[in-house]
Length: 186
Ligand code: HEM
Image (cartoon, rainbow, N blue to C red):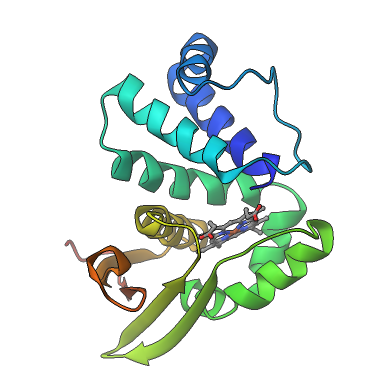
């Protein structure tokens, strides 16, 4: 994946736990590069090793790390021009989720070797069914966090539930997403 992704992991860890913890996590992941280059491609194994090292070092489940990283990614990518692209791609969560493939296609103009995932949406039971397909394994918790981050960006409260898992033999990961009025609780 492009260095920008690893840079975001670094920014999240540094912000939440401090720079010395990041150095320990990087060492644990076996990463020797002093810094990541945004536009350079790194093996996916580097990103997985970093996420695993965060989980081990912080004694957190990997799913929680990926979820937190998804929420953080939207804040991180949302700064500057990418935030404008997200807002231009949809004026609320449902609209943006319906435009993710088109948006990653636009992003690929800047990142030509991008290997983006693919999403499909369908209105269902007053909410939105979101299907996620990728050649990369294990990233469903990341998607849950990303969708949460998108809801945060629009100031919308969301209920998000995974309803099918590729890990468990389903053809793809699928989620039900529902916006709910701000005054109601879970
Ligand atoms: C404008 C904001 C965004 C930018 C700049 C961006 C860019 C990227 C980049 C650079 C990658 C790494 C892929 C590679 O290097 O081959 C990636 C992966 C990914 N993106 Fe985006 N993205 C954005 C928003 C989103 C949103 C809103 C979602 C979903 C709600 C999303 C879902 C994903 C997922 C799940 C991956 C992991 C790769 C995979 O599943 O195969 N992205 N994105």
